[in-house]
Structure formats: C-alpha cells, structure tokens
Image (spheres, rainbow, N blue to C red):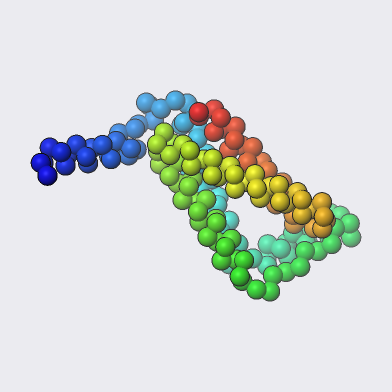
Length: 162
C-alpha cells in the first residue's frame, strides 16, 4: 500500500480518538455526559469489587438496616451460599465499566453505548420493583432505589447530549 493511503487510514481511525476531539469543541451536553460516564465507570467498578469480595457482607448490612428501621416488616433476604450468579454479576458490572469508559473517552463517537447502560438500569430497576412487590425483601427496595436514580440521571444527561 502507498504510504499516503496508510497515513490517511490511520488518521481516519485516529479521528475518533479523544485527542482530536477536545472538550472545547464539544456541546455542553456531551461534556456533562463525559463526566457522568467517567463517574459511573468508577462507581460500577467499585460496586463490582464490593459484590465480588463482599457479597454476603452487603446482604447482611441491608438485613441489619432493615431490622433497625422497620423491625419485622420486611423479612431478611437469605445470604448467598453459592457463587454461580456472582460470575454473571461480575461480568455484567465490568461490561458497564467498559461501556461507560468508552463514552467517557469520546462521547461523540460512542454516544449510542449509553443506550445499553440505560437498558441495563431500566431492567434492573424494573426487576427489583417486581421482586420487592412479590417478596418484600428490603434489599430489593434498596436495589430499586439505587438503580432507579442512576437510570434517571443517565437518561436526563443522555437526552441533553443528543
């Protein structure tokens, strides 16, 4: 291949890079999305580590808080005795970290990846609400009250960016 063609191909791919897409050239909505997704990537990474290494600790804490605040109104959620679903939880959280990282790196080029994050948060919020309605575990309420606002904040910032 001709050296000029190779250079043009390299620049074409490089044009998606953040280096050529400075914040000064971005709309305010994309800048907000960049920062929110960087924060989100960090939150999801920390949550992933906590789920991976402190799975039952989190459930125990939610049971303790539930008992202190609501006495016997909500039953304690059973602790996990196996790690099968933990593998899937960890991989999903790492996927969210990667998606948010891509959008934070270059929101203009990777804007649509936000939709996947929104689908994930809408799904988890809906399922937490449904599980809470059926089983009345305080942990499900906590899940809905955590993922619901994350969904809404991400949606509002995404809508401002498009």
